[in-house]
Image 1: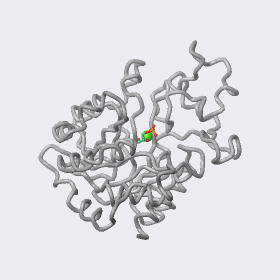
Image 2: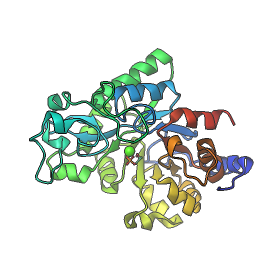
Image 3: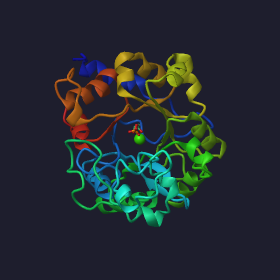
Image 4: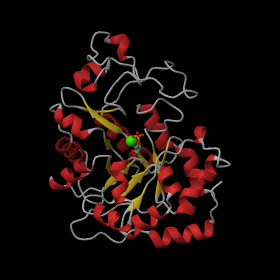
Amino acid sequence: MIPFSFQAGILLVAAGLPAPAQEGRAEVPDSRMIVIAHRGASGYLPEHTLPAYAVAHGMGADYIEPDLVVTGDGHFICLHDIHLEATTNVAEVFPDRAREDGRWYAADFTVAEIRRLEAVERMDGRFPKGAGRFRVPTFAEMIELVQGMNRSSGRNVGIYPELKAPSWHRAEGLPMEEALLEILERHGYREPGARVFVQSFELESLKRLRALGSKLPQVLLMAEVEQYRRFLSPEGMAGIVDFADGIGPAKTMIERQREIVAWAQEAGLLVHPYTFRADRTPSRYGSPVEEIRGHLFGFGVNGVFTDHPDVARGAIDWY
Ligand code: G3P
Ligand code: CA
């Protein structure tokens, strides 16, 4: 079990709040502790479906995450993979449309064809695979749902879109960054303080968005692989502020090297680790709530990506 003290943690969080926006940088809308619904309330319903997003809103998420890929006719759809077969019945509906590598790429389908697919549960032990009827939504539909529920509930839940494989899409003739800014602008996410974070594992994509003039808040995702190691120092974090307002590291990176949080926050970056899964809590923690509180109040992170937004909401609000 990782020890932590709530009181010390609260002080850390307070001390670690990012500095006010500097000239030319995004005005980050939210330095509260935030709950980010990872792929919607994906612990309860198939990921990246409108019902999963609606449940996340109802459970009190502060932000809802769509992963984004692009169809061949240029529409953003909410999907984690550039391939369709892990979370849809594409192999049944379009048996002859796989590439030579045996995979079905969303980029090879029109949005009308994507609408013919059923979305299915990815993970074992969750919603029954193939039960119910779910669709793959477009990003526009996701935004309309969140904004509609914001209106009906009086809340102001944000969106946290991730560009998936932007360099791969560009090589396929489907550049993402320009199209993302256009759709965000069209839906009112245009001011620096808009309730949105744009995230990517590809720093070149975040730099491209800045070069296109975006002042929206941006987050650099990091995995435990060599390419991100150069950022894991005070100097490394200071280099990130040129193109991002926060980092989204794998939670295990923080557990191995808790200084990452202070280095990032001292540079003015928010820290939003991923992914907290109440049904897959590591055995070193006594409960999902203990794990989330350990990160928020012990390590002092600013928010968490979670498949179970109700659990994280409780971990923040009920302590
Ligand atoms: O975007 C944060 C987290 O979702 C990154 O991992 O693979 O679930 O998109 P992934
Ligand atoms: Ca993601």
